[in-house]
Length: 340
Picture (cartoon, rainbow, N blue to C red):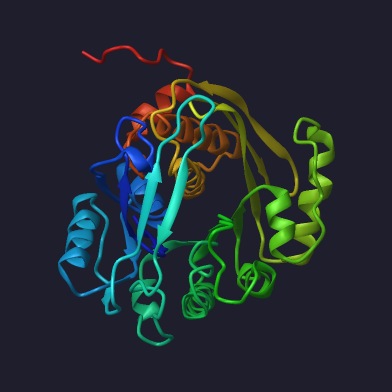
């Protein structure tokens, strides 16, 4: 079984407990997480060998992050060391009509000044079937964007399937470049792209399209504009999220292969325990479907939506649901009962 490789930043997550506001907190709950690492954890839970590549500071906090990576059964074989610190993000978990809030403290993190040539990508991609990156990494710094481009070029040359979650964060992209300056070149190498169409077009410098996602018949024309621009693109996917409140979400999804549009039933999640990382759970579900010997587009989007829904019920950054639990939800089995 070939491994799945992800590349990005793992951060220390400090979150308030019991839905407290930052100003009320006297302590924070410690977790680790990051978009690309979260995807690797999902796939490891589904039984696939996964590897996370990053740059960690060579100090006690970096070693603690390394221990967490290994604890989640994710390979750290090609992690490199250097930089001043591990990035941190603070999370205030919302409830009801009060949304969650994130404050980043990640300047000068280990990955921010990573350099081309320090990661042996040919070694990394030996026996790899998939390479996953997201828009979070090139948003950190020019250095991180350059190394990401280095990675996708090697991955393409070695015949590795390249997947991308656009993952736009308005609070990032602070180093003088906009997504439209960086992302178009990177996306040339992607075979699978996850993201809403407005974000996708913004990142390549085109006008917003504001598609009506309820009008499925009109959506292919918008997706096709992306397929026309990127010949290596095979599939696009979109998470459909309808936020009724911080505690009540509705989740659906779309998967498009240039021939047919596949949709998954919108599911209700209430109460929401932790929304962070739910998009990464969706991406993990898409990759899981793609690497199965019996790839089925409809099953793939159904699995991704079910995984995303279950993540909302799990505290922390990553989805700890098993393959069997996700499949049970896909099949419409009973939920919320005690397993005895």
